[in-house]
Amino acid sequence: MNFQLNNIPDRSDKPRERGITMVMDKGLSIRQVEDFLSVAEPHTDIVKLGWATSYVTPNLEQKLAIYREAKVPVYFGGTLFEAFAIRNQFDDYRRILDQYKLEYAEVSDGSIDIPHEQKCEYIHQLSKQVTVISEVGSKDEEKIIAPYRWIELMEAEIQAGSWKLIAEARESGSVGIYRESGEVRQGLIDEILTQIPYEKIIFEAPQKAQQVWFIKLLGANVNLGNIAPAEVIPLETIRLGLRGDTFSHYLK
Image 1 (tube, helix red, strand yellow):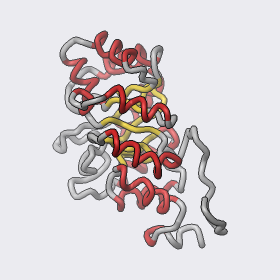
Image 2: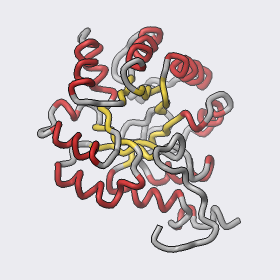
Image 3: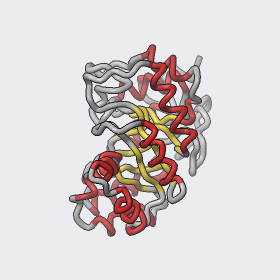
Image 4: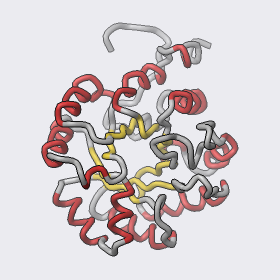
């Protein structure tokens, strides 16, 4: 940090197991990635190339190389995995991970319906190859999953080999763990946290109010995802109580 302040919460050090900031890259250019990393690299733990944007991104290998040089891990969004899986191209997907030297992969079923046992088998197989992040929850706002079922799914995916679990919200922050308005489904979160350690979950929280809510609930080192590149520095100030939303939180 640039100067000394008292009563600032401790932040875990990179590489982090908790306090992770997962950034959503929805199509940054090479120059934008360089500019982004020049200011946000210390506070960025992992980058997701959103949904299947990697399929159409120009200069993909060069872009991945820039992230790799900055020691910021990158992975392809879960929708790309789903696109391969639904076409019976799982082995092709595994070869793609090797081709692009990826160390992480996301397994999700937010856009397709597959038996959960099969999803867990995908997780198990990929965990032998890369570090797996699996996503729980649906992108369909009409599909409501009961809290006990969230817990069952999460526990099974941890057992199958997931390193972290993403709690689904989409890039809009209006499904899954949120209501259509963006309000947190507090009862759902409370239930999940009775059984699943918060350190194992990356809560997708693209909206500032959502970030504030989780930081006030679980502290500076809660894992948050789907953060826009321009919001990484603002998020870090929220974590540290240096923005109005959490300014007094650590002064009590």
